[in-house]
Image (tube, rainbow, N blue to C red; front, side, top):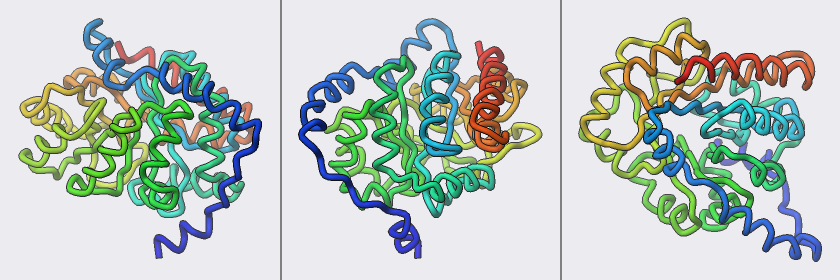
Length: 298
């Protein structure tokens, strides 16, 4: 069923033109110059800084606004930016991001169109871009082709939430061959031995999910996150970034106090951008929230 629903949203890949072929060396040059996620995190650690990592959904309210939002987040001082590719069965996402993905798909936002938007936008950004997508669109394009294509477009990392650790080996190999980093997730129910294995395999940083469930805005950050951060730090020296449920400056401050190396905010920014009545109003609402979060993170 998942495959069938994805197929209905797919669009044919456009054939390259002579003009597109002439731009390939430029695109590849931009990809080579892209900052790595791990390098950015190492620089922040050396300066005693904590990463601010916003997430938005591509195509909501439209791809041009997504491009403007990425530039604005970069200008505000995002250290890494996650960009979600809209998908018909977003298993890890709550109502806000599901709604954004549905609206984007209804406007015929496809993986190829998202990648072309990234190709136009990423080369001018300072923050490395991590693409967030489920595995089915990757499989349709072809794993190696997908990884090389997003690298050439300017992405620095990849996050695929619906593949378990045991099935990431080929994905990680394809990412490494293309020169991008694969970020993996640990959850509150992950046993510590498995946390160790996930942390060992993850690249860039370890994404610690703060809740048992899907993304969404919460009133408070669960106190057990402090223990989860400590547990992960016992098994890895890689950066640990906390997401799911982070929507307010005080949430970010609490996560920083618990020892995390980065704070990830998604649903609140997605809601501000996509549900404010117009693209201009959405950009303004997103900027206000992003600036408040940025100011709360040292």
